[in-house]
Image (cartoon, rainbow, N blue to C red; front, side):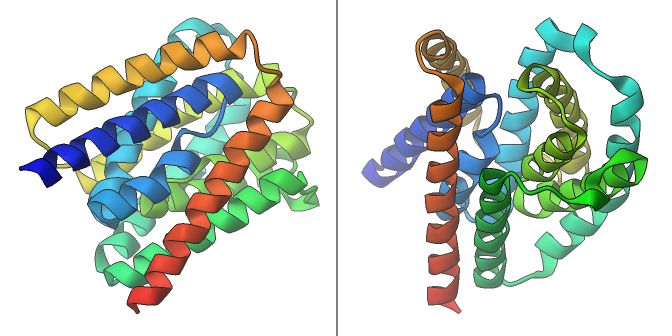
Length: 243
């Protein structure tokens, strides 16, 4: 019983931390939470719970910013993601857990490194770039819960400001996470755990909103990315150790 309560407590802390950094930096819930959730719950349950939570957080933000969404730019991203989400779910369901864990670690670590570098890739510009980014993001979101970096790289190469990026990322987050959860199903968790997840997301969002008024955006994003990189490397190490 004590160990079960310990797991529940850690789960709440992960959710609060993920929601806080998402509200603080505009990105980061999945990057920060997925490595910890897959270590705690296993790859299958951890990723789909992250999909549920990230979709909920994006929906809350979108309720305020929906008028700023660029639907014309988002259609190719969303359409491409819809095509690759089933492939990601299929791969995630068939790989052995250590392989999946190591693969998630690699995806998170590489994605974070590219975002930190601010990679400029000509192929990620225009409609073709949106399709490529959406396809990569849909697969990564469904298989590893980390679809955000591909969309972030598209935004960097499209020259979007942070103010332009956030509402569109929230819209994309809602849609792609609905696709991902539909493809894999809702995680089988007790009702009290779901209540804890909801309360943790609400608390984390409130903390992040308070910090956002005091912490400059650039240092906040750097902290989020460094935490995500540490989590990705940890997941990679555990996966390789268990092979």
